[in-house]
Amino acid sequence: MNPKKILQFSIGPLGASALSLLTLPFIAWFFTVEDVGRLTMLHVILGLSSSIIGLQMHQSYVREYHEQNDKKLLFKVALIPAMVIFSLIVLISLILPYSISEILFGIDSDTLTIYLFIALFSSVIINLLAHVLRMQERGLAFSLTQIAPKLILIVLIGCIYIFNFPNEFVVLMAMNTIALLTSLFVLLWLTRQTWLVALGKPINFELLQNMLRFSLPLVAGGLAYWGLTTMDRFFLRAYSGFEELGVYALSVSLAAGVSVVSALFSNLWHPIVYKWIKDGIEINKVRMVTESMLLLVAIIWTFVGLNSWVLLNFLPEDYISIEYLIVACVSMPLFYMLSETTVVGIGITRRSSFSMLASVVSFLINAILNYLLIPDYGASGAALASMIAFFVFFLIRTEASSFLWESIPRIKIYFVVLMYISATIVMVFTENKIGGFSYLWVFILFITLLLFWVRVEELYQILNNYIARKS
Image (cartoon, rainbow, N blue to C red):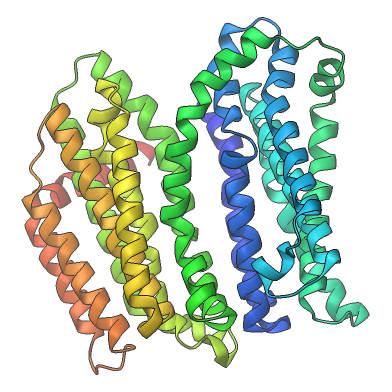
């Protein structure tokens, strides 16, 4: 993929992230903290849809795309399990005497349940159609599908103010459902040459079996990672209620801006490192990238620790605890981003079971810590539990990669990471009420730069040479 294509595919995630950061304060001002918590449950369930309803068939679609001549048939086969499972879920929900909206949102409402099913259906189809655009290398169209729901949501939120719509959760749910449904229609139009032809294709059951054979093992890993990143919401919902859930969810959503950088890095890093290995590159080059990434993680973590108070100027008083919660929440995408540089040995040796092991162990640790901490500490307990679980995730991936492939020096890396974890724990438990705590963040960054001073000098020289070439 050339730089132009990479840029086109990057516009969507970056734009969607920026628009999300813009919409979150508006939602926080217009709706109650409890409603923001309920919205979080919607996003959690939508995140689960690709594994449970879609059976990770989008990954099978990507895997088989270049090996199947009939791309339209491939799309239809990938879609079949989702349609069957979604129909079963709707049928079961009609038979059971429980209210799905009551379980998820604490409100018994048939309207909310209908909105939920429409959102689920749209989300599953959007996920698969987006991969059609991705495999066709239609970067701008793909980016449009990422940005469109956020733009539509902003317009709808504006309508609340202009037309004085009631700021109730059913309105918030309707807006998110409309945004997803509109995005689905846009995607259906952009991919019409694929799915319209696919409808008339006969089902290839042999291809379906092969695709399921590839995708089903991925469901377990997908569920484990989904649980790792979302189980805290369920524990907060059960033990602390929607108010704590709303504050915590907004913290996680704001911190997720860092995950965009992580996603872009992953998309670029994996093809590059595999090419390096093929060309016989030395381990020192991978080590350089790992240590450079650690410096970036340290800078971002320090920046958030020093400036988290700024967020309070844009949010209602109900969200005052975000000042210290976001520091723990931002550690999650940072640990994932750092682990992407240390995990290469698992991919090179094709021992993907170790990646699943990292997800499963971290999932279990997160569940235990959430159970122990949330009843007493609420959102603070959830944030710290997830931070520690992601550290374990990073630790297992790093150690497994070193065991399977080449061992990289890790003592200094772990020392720096543990310093930042310790400072974050103190900040969260004391609710950032220790005077002069900002000096500690600066001190930790200073120690990190000293430990990796050789790498700092190398990066400075590379940047200097780059600027000289450009000028």
